Length: 614
Image (cartoon, rainbow, N blue to C red; front, side, top):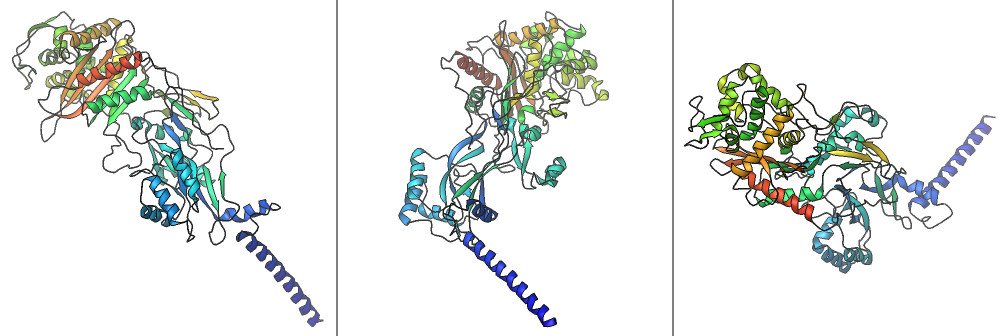
């Protein structure tokens, strides 16, 4: 009986062994690719090899940004050269390799080295960048005709276009596992996100990160056997989310045509550090936002790139702040534009003097504003209760963040579009504000005064609207990928807790700003302007600089008529002391470029449509 049980047990074990051998043989048949061309069991073959697939992400599925006309800012599609590891298999003939190398503008040795060193699928990039190089039709034909193993042409989305101007406003993405785990712990736990996934690091990429996350990437895979050799007959397979709603499309208020023109004006003037902001005078929409030095989102922290957005960073404004001092004096009833003032070049206190050594002589307050007389405005500010200066600055949108925000957005959470926006300051504190010397310095935009170029341009819009402050908007709406409406970010006011300045005060300040151009400090720089313009210049002395350096400002608007269209702020940083203020000339160039854009007979370019890879 015992021998019988042993014999039966051996028979069972033998049967199990035969089954394992059969399954192993079948698996080997599939893995070695002999069944690749058999149509009877394609599903089994795919299941067997997908475990060993080399994937290339050609679209990360993240939401894309467009300008106000629909032109793409991010996610630009290109036809790219893609290569997959070959694990020792020959790529092709030397002649074919040389032909492709010549087509790409490189050497055969460099191409062979790149192919040989591949450990994972990659795309051929532009020299010195991480962006996929866009292939021409001739290059695509060359790739097809050379038929190199593991080398093909694939549609690919570059997140950022090289040298795209508004990248400080858009921001960048990067890997940040700690912040990712803090914000998306649930998604990480459910494996909908990986710790290596990118997250917005600055700008709209950061503030809107939760809204930009899609439902998954589009990945092209090369199917391989157990030895990681490509399987004949299976080739490449693309997997992508089956959801027509994603990725979302974020329509900004930026205008790429205006953005490019303004940046060109800054670079033509040789500006290396600074900022420019152009707002729609009707509603404070941000049409252009330039920050220099530029941002390279693929080289964060490296040389030649500056992550800081100078357009929303606070700086000493110099005489631009005289707009506030004038408005405060008018609001307090302490002055009027016709009031007579005498300037002999010296304030006779606190070491303050006028920029014109010999003084301006006898002049009205409006003329003092036009000539940017320090003596007049230091005295005006010292006589004022500091509360008037502080409150007026707040009413005009200074000393606080003014960018568009929602306490409760579509998903029930707060949304603040410009998270890095600085509030700036007027006085350091109430105690120092009571000091006469502090008030005198504050009145001419020195001491502790700090404003951003965005605030400066928005202050002009506030004046144009009779004292009603608006919140500068960088995004106007969000749509799904199929065009269906998702959310509108409507223009909204940005009132201060102190209310508004009076309409009469706003009108008087605008009148004085026009005098700056017709008879004041900007007369020479803007004499050739076709549009009638108005504004205020400012030169801020930089405290603590080893050598005497200044920041140059000009803020203004145009055309001066019943319906002004643009409010503009120009900042040129770190200029040698004694150099004539150049910001007014750049302002004039910007306004002329805006005029020519409006006059252009060419129709607006149609909104570009980002092609989807299906």
